[in-house]
Image (tube, rainbow, N blue to C red; front, side, top):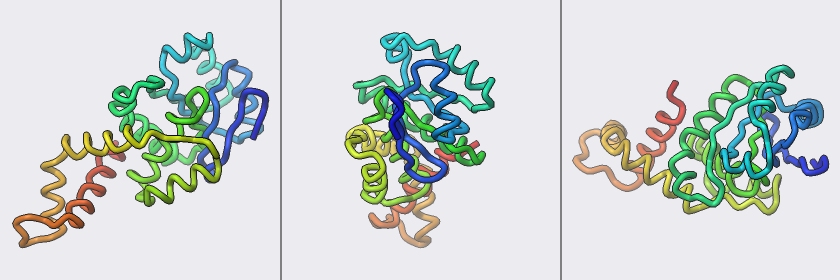
Length: 200
């Protein structure tokens, strides 16, 4: 829904993706018109400085409105930084949704970082098929292009970091087998990814 430079789309009733607010008063619009009760900002310090955004003032105003304000900075056009930071962003989104908020996820122009975090959340936490998650996003928000490179790299990193846990889970899923087959390994991967992304 457009509102000047602010525009957003409803992915589902509890989840919105949109452009970044610039002024504290933009939060009034997001609360009143988008129905947001929490905001997850993915803007880096560089993004904020480039647009002259005073995030502390914005957060202060949001809190005064009763909004929950969260921020996990991901650098624009920096695949490595996004790859490293994606798990933390997914955890933050999971935490907000779990508390029952209607979450407005934004970067600056909402084409890559915000859709990437929503895509990763829907697939890695909720278990939605990757293509189905992409379709859901693109139907609601045509033109988005969450980075496949960052997404795949994040999954590889999670597997590398938690390989022993995945191996153990695979053996539990297929007891008596010395070496789990590909399908069992993938089930174990998905289960462990979800575990670590939703851990308290």
